[in-house]
Length: 100
Image (cartoon, rainbow, N blue to C red):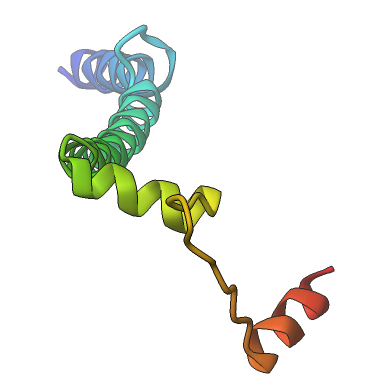
């Protein structure tokens, strides 16, 4: 009877080691796959946020006022017979200088 007990224990230990570390569906591989899934879910959330920002920007640019605002603020465009003055504050100049 003692021989059978030892054989079963040896087989169980071998089976447990095989399933936890060696098998293609091992615990280590499952842990790596779960980490990959977590990273991909974080990336998915980031891209959903970026899509929402882009959709908001597209919605703003779909109107004439939005296009005019973008042209004036980003490209410093102006209407005829109109002067544009760009005002820079001292604080903003210091920040730009420190970043260089």
